[in-house]
Length: 632
Image (tube, rainbow, N blue to C red):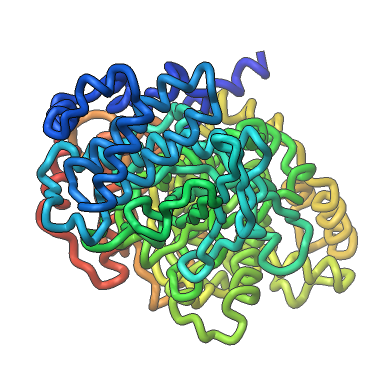
């Protein structure tokens, strides 16, 4: 009976399950695969080009000879029609050879990439190149398709190493590809890449939208292994980080006279581009870089045990305190404002993935913000959880902005969902003696006890606001608690949560040394997280009564499951009367259950708040879009 109640609690508490599975249908989930899937014979425009040069009949019996003749003609007199035909015919021939003569097929795929690149960028073709020509988009697909095949061939020969060389035998000779990660345009280094995976090999579920930019290049998942026990920034990285890169090949053109000798090694540069910082490639014209930010994000979190941790963190918080901490999804970038996302009860950072995925669609947010996720065991008593977050944020500032030179760090924004909103609130208030006086009528300074015990108590009960936090967004935050914790489900679940042993010993020692200062029956342990959330609980009312930093701005996003007066509305877990606070700069009620952090209107509102934080007032279409979603 008891165990049966736990899923009921979690059913009422929002959570997002993001998963990745191997792609099906021969990677048909990518645009260039769909575009090129049926391209197994020359298009009508390419047939016209063959006919114009009297090569149509010869093509049926001598494909290599025709390709050689077209190449010779293009080198003597560069022409868009011929160069596009070479790219298309090279791709078709590569597909034909793929099942019987892999080496020859690869040679054709490399040619498809090189000719498509020439068609898109060669200066001598500028006069005849028109972006409105359907072949322009097809040239991008041919480039991407050929590069995809080349990367797969390179992977079959071993790992692709940044700042290294790929050597492939093609037509009995060696093709050389220099792999290059441009550290000047990214916080990543070559040493950060332990594994490279093609995004098209995976399908994502659990995300309502996908952050994907169509353009030129092949999106990749780069995997980095990390040691969280190491000192310095390393301790803020997940043990296995996955981040987006895009492969972009810069070939040596066959149109140039210096590349006539087919016996010489063909040297090309394979750039690994950071799509968060770089959005276009090439010049005259520059083209959008194809990028996939969602699949690496989903891949990273789907390969963690955080779905299990939300259970163990709730029911056995003492045994899971060591894993608590701040996690960066990219290396720290100076002069970007940190946005720290704090999850709620019986949850984990996975709950933020839909919002994070959507926010990263906005290049202004990519440019100005960096996101950090806070993980903690949600069963731990509230004062201990708040102290953990406070100290972790302080450690981050000591690590990344010790001298205060990075003024953007000191503009930190906290996003807190449910109980995470309460923890975020505790970061920007001064406690005074309000927490301590809930337990005793004597001041903390008058309590007798070992210095180490009293020092630890001060961590939990006596604190000042963090002056580098300037804005807090509350999402479905129960400032005055929830009736859920008073019901059967709440009582049973609270009874399952184990106390950290050292806390019980600490309190017992204080009661023994100060027999007249405490109620022995009530001061045996700190309230569990669920008990803290009871309606009008003393800890929550004390938190509301604390003085906030005058420099911080509050925003509330509140869920309502059905139309009606705000005062009687609820998100199914937290009523409006609990989520509402008087001193918020803005308040938005959206049609949502308690999982408001994944609601489209809530995400738009968070985007608006972040843009406002950097001085950008939202466009009217954003406000209209928000209202439209709310009405639905």
